[in-house]
Amino acid sequence: MTRKFTGDTLLVATHNTGKLEEIAALLAPLGVRAVGADGYDLPEPAELGTTFRANALTKAQAAAAATGLPALSDDSGLSVEAFGGFPGVYTADWAETPNGRDFPMAMEKVWSRLQRQKAPAPYVAHFCCTLALAWPDGHAELFEGRIRGQITWPMRGDQGHGYDPIFMPDGHDVTFAQMDRWEKNKLSHRGRAFELLMAGCFDR
Image (tube, rainbow, N blue to C red):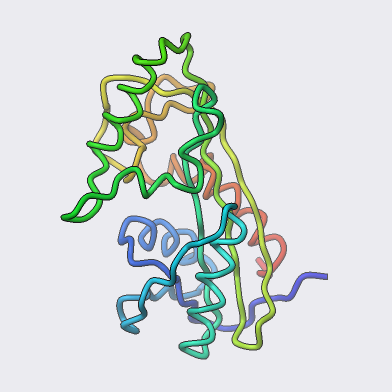
């Protein structure tokens, strides 16, 4: 049986403001306040895992142990079928530069590689999100959500974050970055993982 969350404040173990805003919006109807890692001056633990589950668990447990608060972390990424599932857990790494993360550059990298490989269209891909909710005593619950779609070009939309401007979910003719937050949250990989989290750990 999964453990229930009974507090009113949840530490979200991320320094990504886009993710924090999305998670805060999902938690607000439950009367739970989401606070980010920046407010606690938490360092980002090394993500050495080879799966989304391992990385999410590392981040959540490190944050819970450091603050004494229940902590939620997500590890998510884009997997492109033509690349054998890459970048996957290395999605953020593809955006790294000496001056921080550059996602337009990373999206260019995805598109250029598809063209170099002469991959056949449609360019099938999926987003995966694993959520880990950890308590200070070390207990944790994990939930995974996925959504299939395809890579599209050129980049479209200015909503969302990360690779959203080149990902068009199945059944839609717009990218994640062309959807407003509420529309995206209803169907995204993070939204689906949250549905499982809510059902397992929260009384709604």
